[in-house]
Image 1 (cartoon, rainbow, N blue to C red):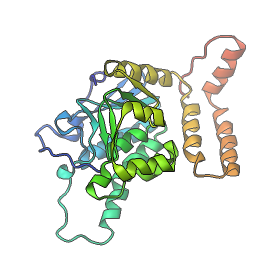
Image 2: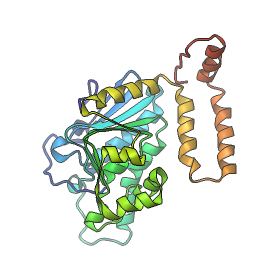
Image 3: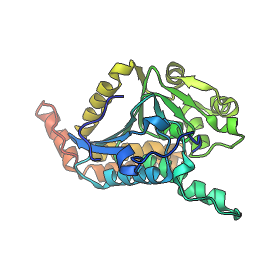
Length: 286
C-alpha cells in the first residue's frame, strides 16, 4: 500500500533478521492528517511481523489517539506484500533458562491481548486497510478494527494450528462474534488461507477493493469518520462491542446512559440545529 501522509519517523514468528533500522519508531510510522491518525507498519522485509517494542508502540499510539481531541479517526495499514505476518519474537527479551509456570499466560495477557484490547478500547473509530497477508496476531489485529477494508490481494490465515498452538490475541473471542462459531472453528481447526473475497462473503471484512484503490478508499472512509460526531461514534462503538457480552436489560441501560451523555455535546446540539435549519451539520468532535 502507498505511504501514508508525511510521517514522523502472535503468532507467526517471521523468519527474518533484525535490520539496523528496525527501531519501533522507524517501522511503526505515524502521522496525523486532517484529524486522522495514520499508523503504518513499515517493515516489509519481515512481512511486518511485530517485535515486542513495535507492539508497544502500536499500543501507545492507539491510547494516544483516544486521549487527543484533535484525532477523530485512526487508520491502521502497512507497506509491502503483507499487512502483518504475526509476531516476530527475535526483537524481544531473551527467554528464561527455565520457564516458570504461568509465564506463557502472563506473556499473552501482557502482549497479544493488550494489543487487541487497545484496538477494541480505542475511543476513536479504527479502520484497517489490509494490503496483503494477515496471519496469526496480524489477522486478529485487523479483525479487531471497527471497519476492515481489504485489498483484493489480501489473505487471512489462522496459522496457530499449523504450529500446534491454540489461538491467542483474541482470535477465539473475535471470530465467533463476526462469523459465528461453526465458521470460526473451520478457520481455527484447518488454518487455511482465506482470500479477501471469501473473507468479505463471510462477513470478516466490510469491503474488498482493487489494490490500487485501497489507500484512496481508506482515506475517504477515514475522512468521513473524522468529519462526524466523534463522541457519538465512540459511544456507538462502545455499545456495539459490549452488546454481545450483556443481557438485554444491561444493554438497554447502557444505551440510555450513552444517550444521556451524548446529548450534552456540542455536536448533538449542532445536529439538531442543522436539521431545523435544513443544512448539513458541521461537527467539531466535541
